[in-house]
Length: 155
Image 1: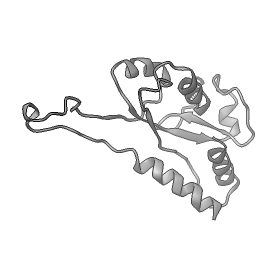
Image 2: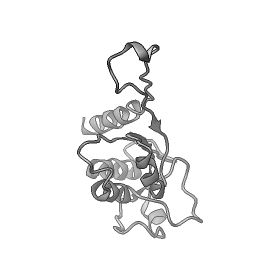
Image 3: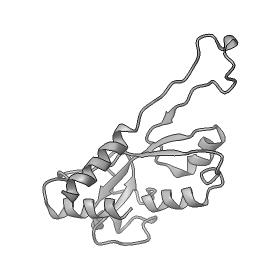
Image 4: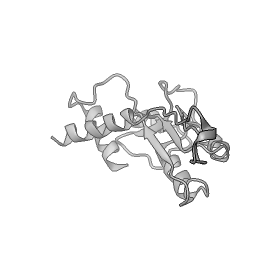
């Protein structure tokens, strides 16, 4: 049952990754001066770009925590906690073994805690997580699946 609940949460994160448009056809006839449109930035996994995104007023963003096992995490420069279960690298595609500087979910949490834009109480920031896995089914009760579910639960 717990596994089903976790997967339900994952599905909610994916479903919440929607694009919304809020405009009025005749803005001159409305009394609402806050009319505009909102948008979601998809797969914005390079956190170095987030300050520019915040400056432009973005409040909806989707990132891709990609589960990899501990052997893939080991050479990653940004993975500070070498967890035997694995880690989440921020990338939409399968991580390349040649690249060792992927951002991680730990980097994302640090940015959200420490960024003046993300922690501004007058702004509401929405972050959707679209979890990725390779070569296993999160419901197959394998060691990798159990490690994945355990790491998702500990975020």
